[in-house]
Image 1: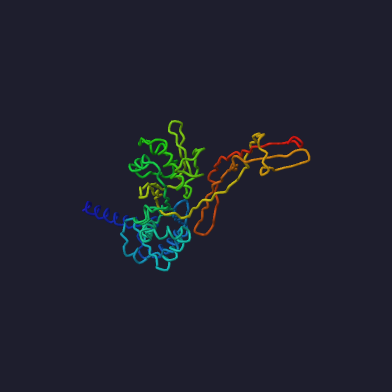
Image 2 (image 1 turned 120 degrees about the horizontal axis):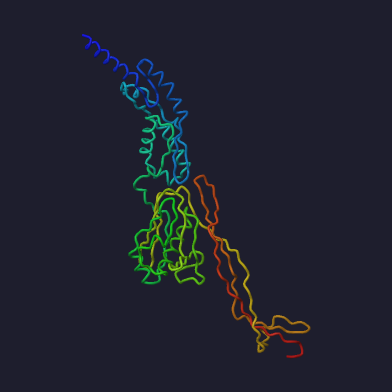
Length: 371
């Protein structure tokens, strides 16, 4: 008899204890079922008010307005399991969904917005709200549609000069730009047996792409005398033995790739691939000219009237230009970054010196009376 009585008591105690441990997330409900609705109606708005959810993409942080999500009391109550930690259920109306979409469009621009899997993103937010998680940062890169994962962000066409460069590019795999790290061309291409000319060609093409991107901190050497496949500013001289390299920094926690595709007509298309950009980029060149030097060469035979440049009371000066001078030029390369809200920011990327040409003039100074 006493054993049966003890069993009944213990069984009843366990049921009572289980009911007292009923929760929704951190909200304690206990065993008073008639108070569940009031408790949830009081505690859920406090949870929403005190919680912070952020969406992060390319260093742009957007706070999610959690007021867009409506607490579904009926579904939460109907699905309660006594003695367990239960989920809360939240819904979002079409009107509020449109408002959240407007927030994303304003912050991230049309290109990024069109690539977002909105339903997948909303499902993730609702799942975290259901366990009453107070703070959450969402990496938007995880909610980009599969069809937008490797967009062509920028491309250029380069002329190929030598067959050896073409043959090297034919075996070149896409070049990876790791997330949040410095890129080194010599390190990345160390598995290939390319000569300095091919490496310089590849580096110059990459620089041509990278100046219209988010990459920064460019370190490289340039040619004094440009190779025939290059042009001022966008040229990189690679010397493996001496460590002449191309390096730059990728500040985003996203990986990018650069690929070379051989085309007809002796051309190659170079593409930067990755997730869509928030901002748009373009570069600008500012010439800071420095005057050229002049060298005079004495020439006693120069007495033709067409070369007379000066005649005074005491002398006549004849001059003939042998080599035209070209200014020694410093070029400043700038990047113009435009955000979705139409703000523009100018950043100096690097400077380049284009060596000038010394003017050479033959000159004959003839004193009056000695002609």
